[in-house]
Image 1 (tube, rainbow, N blue to C red):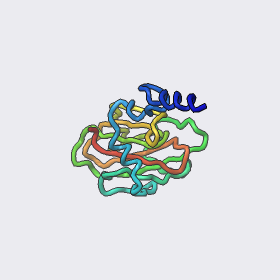
Image 2 (spheres, rainbow, N blue to C red):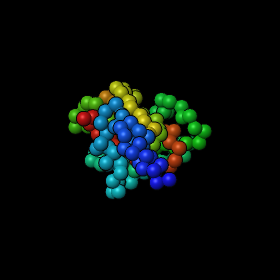
Image 3 (cartoon, rainbow, N blue to C red):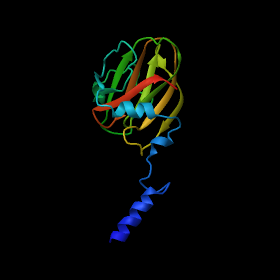
Image 4 (cartoon, rainbow, N blue to C red):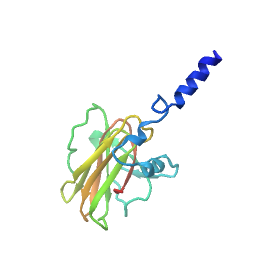
Length: 167
């Protein structure tokens, strides 16, 4: 029995073996900062419908509402796959600099950013189901105007996200 245990430990140490690494290093772009922020215990709690005064410099935990209670700026671009889901909206002030911004989520969800009455253009996305704490990251082109970040199709009543300029 002892021999079998030692062989199992040796196999786990081999590159590419099960358990040797998770999918966090396999996103289309590095997310080490986002992963650390999502794991940090001191996240700001934000209710759906809130308006923030600036982009947060850490992850935020958003309290979501049942689908029928969310006041979206525009209906979500994609219909959620779940029959019962949660969503929310958080509003942000005008950005100091337009450019490519990145939104990274802890769980399965659809992201829309509404700016000047229309959806912001996505320029890339990356998702993994094998990275503890991170599920998806989306890059969008944003102008200098205020915007609303919408999440929909979330299976639970809360989600953690990080938003900031793409690195």
